[in-house]
Image (tube, rainbow, N blue to C red; front, side):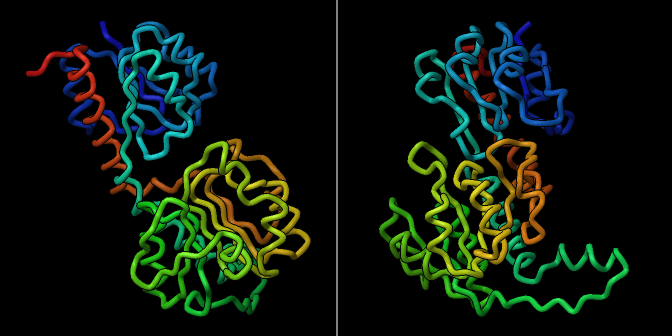
Length: 312
Protein backbone atom coordinates (compact mmCIF):
# COMPACT_ATOMS: atom_id res chain seq x y z
CA UNK A 1 0.00 0.00 0.00
CA UNK A 2 1.37 3.44 -0.98
CA UNK A 3 1.97 5.87 1.85
CA UNK A 4 1.32 9.59 2.11
CA UNK A 5 2.89 11.66 4.90
CA UNK A 6 1.31 14.87 6.21
CA UNK A 7 4.02 16.46 8.34
CA UNK A 8 2.39 19.81 9.08
CA UNK A 9 1.17 19.64 12.68
CA UNK A 10 -2.43 20.63 11.85
CA UNK A 11 -4.31 19.35 8.81
CA UNK A 12 -8.01 18.60 8.32
CA UNK A 13 -7.86 15.25 6.56
CA UNK A 14 -11.56 14.44 6.97
CA UNK A 15 -12.82 17.51 5.09
CA UNK A 16 -10.21 17.62 2.34
CA UNK A 17 -11.70 16.22 -0.89
CA UNK A 18 -8.31 15.54 -2.52
CA UNK A 19 -7.01 13.59 0.47
CA UNK A 20 -10.25 11.64 0.56
CA UNK A 21 -9.76 10.83 -3.11
CA UNK A 22 -6.27 9.53 -2.37
CA UNK A 23 -7.61 7.43 0.49
CA UNK A 24 -10.26 5.95 -1.78
CA UNK A 25 -7.49 4.94 -4.17
CA UNK A 26 -5.78 2.93 -1.46
CA UNK A 27 -3.34 5.50 -0.10
CA UNK A 28 -2.38 5.19 3.57
CA UNK A 29 -1.91 8.48 5.46
CA UNK A 30 0.65 8.96 8.24
CA UNK A 31 0.62 12.19 10.23
CA UNK A 32 2.72 14.28 12.60
CA UNK A 33 1.98 13.15 16.16
CA UNK A 34 4.30 15.70 17.81
CA UNK A 35 2.13 18.81 17.38
CA UNK A 36 5.17 20.86 16.33
CA UNK A 37 7.77 21.22 13.59
CA UNK A 38 9.59 17.95 12.99
CA UNK A 39 13.34 17.64 13.32
CA UNK A 40 15.42 16.17 10.50
CA UNK A 41 15.60 12.80 12.26
CA UNK A 42 11.85 12.76 12.93
CA UNK A 43 11.14 13.56 9.27
CA UNK A 44 13.39 10.67 8.18
CA UNK A 45 11.62 8.27 10.54
CA UNK A 46 8.13 9.39 9.51
CA UNK A 47 8.84 9.15 5.78
CA UNK A 48 10.56 5.78 5.93
CA UNK A 49 11.27 4.11 2.59
CA UNK A 50 7.67 3.61 1.43
CA UNK A 51 6.32 7.19 1.22
CA UNK A 52 5.48 8.33 -2.32
CA UNK A 53 3.98 11.73 -1.49
CA UNK A 54 4.32 14.31 1.27
CA UNK A 55 2.36 17.36 2.36
CA UNK A 56 5.10 19.29 4.13
CA UNK A 57 5.24 21.89 6.86
CA UNK A 58 8.45 23.77 7.68
CA UNK A 59 10.59 20.83 8.82
CA UNK A 60 14.08 20.58 7.27
CA UNK A 61 13.90 18.55 4.07
CA UNK A 62 17.60 17.97 3.49
CA UNK A 63 19.83 15.74 1.41
CA UNK A 64 19.73 13.15 4.21
CA UNK A 65 15.95 13.20 4.29
CA UNK A 66 15.58 12.79 0.54
CA UNK A 67 18.28 10.12 0.36
CA UNK A 68 16.49 8.02 2.98
CA UNK A 69 13.00 8.44 1.47
CA UNK A 70 13.67 6.13 -1.44
CA UNK A 71 10.10 6.05 -2.80
CA UNK A 72 9.31 9.76 -2.44
CA UNK A 73 8.20 11.40 -5.68
CA UNK A 74 6.28 14.56 -4.72
CA UNK A 75 6.57 17.10 -1.89
CA UNK A 76 3.71 19.58 -1.65
CA UNK A 77 4.37 22.43 0.78
CA UNK A 78 1.35 23.64 2.71
CA UNK A 79 2.53 27.24 2.51
CA UNK A 80 4.68 29.47 0.37
CA UNK A 81 8.25 29.37 1.67
CA UNK A 82 10.68 26.77 0.33
CA UNK A 83 13.74 27.77 2.38
CA UNK A 84 13.40 24.60 4.50
CA UNK A 85 13.66 22.43 1.36
CA UNK A 86 16.98 21.57 -0.27
CA UNK A 87 15.70 22.07 -3.81
CA UNK A 88 18.95 20.94 -5.42
CA UNK A 89 18.85 17.69 -3.45
CA UNK A 90 15.20 17.17 -4.38
CA UNK A 91 16.10 17.54 -8.05
CA UNK A 92 19.00 15.10 -7.74
CA UNK A 93 16.66 12.52 -6.25
CA UNK A 94 13.93 13.10 -8.82
CA UNK A 95 11.49 14.60 -6.32
CA UNK A 96 9.04 17.23 -7.51
CA UNK A 97 8.47 20.15 -5.08
CA UNK A 98 5.29 22.26 -5.14
CA UNK A 99 3.91 25.01 -2.90
CA UNK A 100 0.87 27.24 -2.29
CA UNK A 101 2.25 30.81 -2.51
CA UNK A 102 -1.01 32.73 -2.82
CA UNK A 103 -3.18 31.02 -0.21
CA UNK A 104 -1.53 32.30 3.02
CA UNK A 105 -0.63 35.79 1.81
CA UNK A 106 -3.69 37.68 3.08
CA UNK A 107 -3.62 35.95 6.45
CA UNK A 108 0.05 36.80 7.00
CA UNK A 109 -0.54 40.39 5.89
CA UNK A 110 -3.44 40.82 8.30
CA UNK A 111 -1.44 39.36 11.20
CA UNK A 112 1.35 41.79 10.33
CA UNK A 113 -1.09 44.68 10.61
CA UNK A 114 -2.37 43.30 13.92
CA UNK A 115 1.18 43.12 15.28
CA UNK A 116 1.93 46.67 14.11
CA UNK A 117 -1.16 48.04 15.85
CA UNK A 118 -0.47 45.95 18.94
CA UNK A 119 3.08 47.27 19.20
CA UNK A 120 1.98 50.86 18.61
CA UNK A 121 -0.83 50.80 21.18
CA UNK A 122 0.86 48.40 23.63
CA UNK A 123 -2.20 46.20 23.77
CA UNK A 124 -0.54 43.13 25.29
CA UNK A 125 1.28 45.07 28.01
CA UNK A 126 -1.87 46.97 28.96
CA UNK A 127 -3.92 43.77 29.08
CA UNK A 128 -1.44 42.20 31.52
CA UNK A 129 -1.55 45.25 33.80
CA UNK A 130 -5.35 45.37 33.85
CA UNK A 131 -5.48 41.68 34.75
CA UNK A 132 -3.00 42.43 37.56
CA UNK A 133 -5.43 44.95 39.06
CA UNK A 134 -3.94 48.11 37.59
CA UNK A 135 -5.61 50.71 35.38
CA UNK A 136 -2.81 52.17 33.24
CA UNK A 137 -3.38 55.18 31.00
CA UNK A 138 -1.14 53.81 28.27
CA UNK A 139 -0.27 56.30 25.54
CA UNK A 140 0.62 54.71 22.23
CA UNK A 141 1.11 55.97 18.70
CA UNK A 142 -1.03 56.39 15.58
CA UNK A 143 -0.28 54.25 12.55
CA UNK A 144 -1.37 57.24 10.47
CA UNK A 145 1.59 59.19 11.87
CA UNK A 146 4.22 56.53 11.07
CA UNK A 147 6.59 55.91 8.20
CA UNK A 148 6.41 52.18 7.48
CA UNK A 149 9.39 50.57 5.76
CA UNK A 150 8.59 47.28 4.05
CA UNK A 151 11.49 45.01 3.13
CA UNK A 152 10.28 42.67 0.41
CA UNK A 153 7.44 43.54 -1.99
CA UNK A 154 6.12 40.10 -2.78
CA UNK A 155 2.61 38.79 -2.24
CA UNK A 156 2.58 39.62 1.48
CA UNK A 157 4.61 42.84 1.37
CA UNK A 158 2.33 44.43 -1.21
CA UNK A 159 -0.72 43.56 0.85
CA UNK A 160 0.84 45.04 3.98
CA UNK A 161 1.62 48.21 2.04
CA UNK A 162 -2.04 48.58 1.01
CA UNK A 163 -3.28 47.92 4.54
CA UNK A 164 -0.94 50.53 6.02
CA UNK A 165 -1.91 53.04 3.33
CA UNK A 166 -5.56 52.48 4.29
CA UNK A 167 -4.59 53.81 7.74
CA UNK A 168 -2.98 56.86 6.06
CA UNK A 169 0.54 55.78 6.94
CA UNK A 170 3.45 56.74 4.68
CA UNK A 171 4.92 53.61 3.12
CA UNK A 172 8.40 53.10 1.64
CA UNK A 173 9.93 49.84 0.52
CA UNK A 174 13.09 48.04 -0.46
CA UNK A 175 13.23 45.04 -2.79
CA UNK A 176 16.29 44.19 -4.89
CA UNK A 177 14.16 42.29 -7.40
CA UNK A 178 11.38 44.84 -7.95
CA UNK A 179 11.56 47.74 -10.41
CA UNK A 180 8.01 49.08 -10.05
CA UNK A 181 6.34 49.62 -6.69
CA UNK A 182 2.63 49.90 -5.86
CA UNK A 183 1.03 53.33 -6.16
CA UNK A 184 2.22 55.68 -3.42
CA UNK A 185 5.10 53.43 -2.29
CA UNK A 186 8.61 54.80 -2.86
CA UNK A 187 11.41 52.29 -3.49
CA UNK A 188 14.53 53.27 -1.54
CA UNK A 189 17.89 51.69 -0.57
CA UNK A 190 17.84 49.43 2.48
CA UNK A 191 20.15 51.66 4.54
CA UNK A 192 17.88 54.62 3.96
CA UNK A 193 14.80 52.59 4.86
CA UNK A 194 16.33 51.36 8.12
CA UNK A 195 17.49 54.83 9.16
CA UNK A 196 14.29 56.66 8.30
CA UNK A 197 11.40 54.33 9.10
CA UNK A 198 9.36 54.29 12.29
CA UNK A 199 8.26 50.71 11.61
CA UNK A 200 10.31 48.11 9.71
CA UNK A 201 8.40 45.04 8.53
CA UNK A 202 10.15 42.06 6.91
CA UNK A 203 8.53 40.19 4.01
CA UNK A 204 11.37 38.53 2.12
CA UNK A 205 12.67 35.02 1.65
CA UNK A 206 15.36 33.53 3.85
CA UNK A 207 18.63 32.25 2.40
CA UNK A 208 22.37 32.62 2.95
CA UNK A 209 22.28 36.20 1.61
CA UNK A 210 19.50 37.32 3.98
CA UNK A 211 20.66 35.45 7.10
CA UNK A 212 20.63 37.99 9.97
CA UNK A 213 19.76 40.80 7.58
CA UNK A 214 18.89 42.73 10.72
CA UNK A 215 22.06 42.19 12.72
CA UNK A 216 23.52 44.32 15.48
CA UNK A 217 24.82 46.94 13.02
CA UNK A 218 21.52 47.17 11.12
CA UNK A 219 19.52 47.52 14.34
CA UNK A 220 21.90 50.30 15.48
CA UNK A 221 21.11 52.29 12.34
CA UNK A 222 17.39 52.44 13.14
CA UNK A 223 15.56 55.23 14.91
CA UNK A 224 15.79 54.94 18.68
CA UNK A 225 12.05 54.27 19.09
CA UNK A 226 11.62 52.17 15.94
CA UNK A 227 9.42 49.07 15.83
CA UNK A 228 10.57 45.86 14.14
CA UNK A 229 8.04 43.36 12.75
CA UNK A 230 8.86 39.90 11.39
CA UNK A 231 6.23 37.54 9.99
CA UNK A 232 8.51 36.11 7.29
CA UNK A 233 11.33 33.86 8.57
CA UNK A 234 13.18 33.81 11.88
CA UNK A 235 16.67 33.70 10.47
CA UNK A 236 16.27 37.20 9.04
CA UNK A 237 16.95 38.73 12.47
CA UNK A 238 19.75 38.24 14.97
CA UNK A 239 17.41 37.57 17.88
CA UNK A 240 20.08 38.05 20.55
CA UNK A 241 20.99 41.47 19.17
CA UNK A 242 17.29 42.36 18.93
CA UNK A 243 16.71 41.43 22.58
CA UNK A 244 19.63 43.61 23.63
CA UNK A 245 18.36 46.53 21.54
CA UNK A 246 14.91 46.24 23.14
CA UNK A 247 16.27 45.93 26.66
CA UNK A 248 18.59 48.92 26.28
CA UNK A 249 15.85 51.15 24.84
CA UNK A 250 17.64 51.42 21.50
CA UNK A 251 14.41 50.19 19.87
CA UNK A 252 10.86 50.93 20.92
CA UNK A 253 9.25 47.56 20.34
CA UNK A 254 9.26 44.39 18.25
CA UNK A 255 6.67 41.86 17.20
CA UNK A 256 7.70 38.45 15.86
CA UNK A 257 5.72 35.47 14.62
CA UNK A 258 8.76 33.50 13.42
CA UNK A 259 12.01 32.43 15.07
CA UNK A 260 15.26 30.69 14.20
CA UNK A 261 14.39 27.81 16.54
CA UNK A 262 10.75 26.91 17.10
CA UNK A 263 9.30 26.55 19.68
CA UNK A 264 11.16 29.65 20.86
CA UNK A 265 12.89 29.78 24.28
CA UNK A 266 15.28 32.72 23.90
CA UNK A 267 16.03 36.09 25.46
CA UNK A 268 13.11 37.88 23.80
CA UNK A 269 10.78 36.17 26.30
CA UNK A 270 12.15 38.56 28.92
CA UNK A 271 11.43 41.69 26.87
CA UNK A 272 8.22 43.44 27.92
CA UNK A 273 8.27 45.48 24.70
CA UNK A 274 8.26 42.37 22.48
CA UNK A 275 5.07 40.73 21.20
CA UNK A 276 5.70 37.07 20.37
CA UNK A 277 3.33 34.71 18.57
CA UNK A 278 3.77 31.05 17.70
CA UNK A 279 4.13 31.05 13.88
CA UNK A 280 0.40 31.60 13.35
CA UNK A 281 0.68 33.83 10.29
CA UNK A 282 -1.24 31.52 7.96
CA UNK A 283 -3.58 30.18 10.64
CA UNK A 284 -6.67 32.11 9.69
CA UNK A 285 -9.46 29.61 9.14
CA UNK A 286 -10.25 30.65 5.59
CA UNK A 287 -6.63 30.84 4.48
CA UNK A 288 -5.74 27.56 6.15
CA UNK A 289 -8.58 25.79 4.37
CA UNK A 290 -7.41 27.18 1.05
CA UNK A 291 -3.79 26.21 1.76
CA UNK A 292 -4.69 22.66 2.67
CA UNK A 293 -6.98 22.26 -0.33
CA UNK A 294 -4.36 23.60 -2.74
CA UNK A 295 -1.55 21.56 -1.15
CA UNK A 296 -3.56 18.34 -1.48
CA UNK A 297 -4.63 19.23 -5.02
CA UNK A 298 -1.00 19.88 -5.95
CA UNK A 299 0.02 16.55 -4.44
CA UNK A 300 -2.67 14.60 -6.28
CA UNK A 301 -1.78 16.26 -9.58
CA UNK A 302 1.93 15.71 -8.99
CA UNK A 303 1.43 12.01 -8.25
CA UNK A 304 -0.56 11.65 -11.43
CA UNK A 305 1.95 13.54 -13.56
CA UNK A 306 4.85 11.48 -12.19
CA UNK A 307 3.00 8.26 -12.97
CA UNK A 308 2.59 7.13 -9.36
CA UNK A 309 -1.19 7.23 -9.75
CA UNK A 310 -3.30 6.91 -12.85
CA UNK A 311 -5.84 9.52 -13.91
CA UNK A 312 -9.48 8.66 -13.52
